Length: 240
Ligand SMILES: C[S@@+](CC[C@H](N)C(=O)[O-])C[C@H]1O[C@@H](n2cnc3c(N)ncnc32)[C@H](O)[C@@H]1O
Image 1 (tube, rainbow, N blue to C red):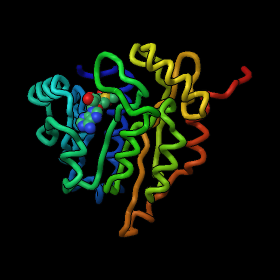
Image 2 (cartoon, rainbow, N blue to C red):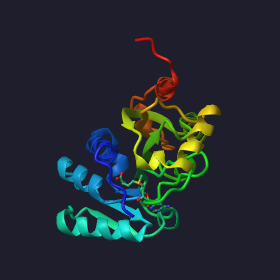
Image 3 (cartoon, protein in one colour):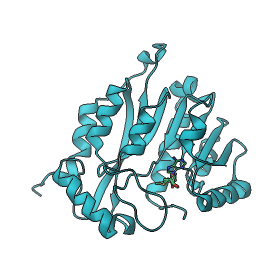
Image 4 (cartoon, rainbow, N blue to C red):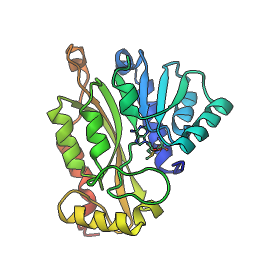
């Protein structure tokens, strides 16, 4: 099944647009960008069109139905610079020439009916696997319900420097409310690995850079401690 959420997918699209229009990041994006999980294809199609970008982007989608949807969308409205391939990202992109990866990865801690949104038992497995890869520039959507502190720690442990982030609230939808998913979220919340309020959680679009050539050191960064506090904020009791 194909995932598309008007709020979440549009936010991902906006984060992709910001990445590909940031001139300072051109040295890392110019050779191309790879995407884990194209879904409907709409987020990147719309980002590329708004940005009028010529950067080549290759999306990988392992769900055959989502892939067919994305291919149709690309054929209908796609910019020539965005292509979608059927297959597992990790099997295909690890040896790819691109040094930049983007994703709104699956981050639910249990499987449900519908699209593949399973991110492992803490929801962060796919995200951490991407951060364990060889990419220099990484832009990922990171959720406050999928071990966000563990994700930030993994990024630091893998040598990434936080460059930029944006965050927005996401209302719990039917996929999160599936009984098995919801039960796991409660367990993770008790263990300090998921942060949310009664109706919503937070989703951040985060850009990290690991530049072994050190030319990226000149780019201004952001403070990971501030981002960590924001992503845990859903847990706080706020006096109005
Ligand atoms: C949360 S959805 C995001 C879809 C789209 N990018 C969006 O934001 O609307 C995650 C997508 O990743 C795909 N996916 C998960 N693991 C993948 C993998 N290893 N290789 C390729 N696609 C994958 C899923 O099938 C799903 O379509």
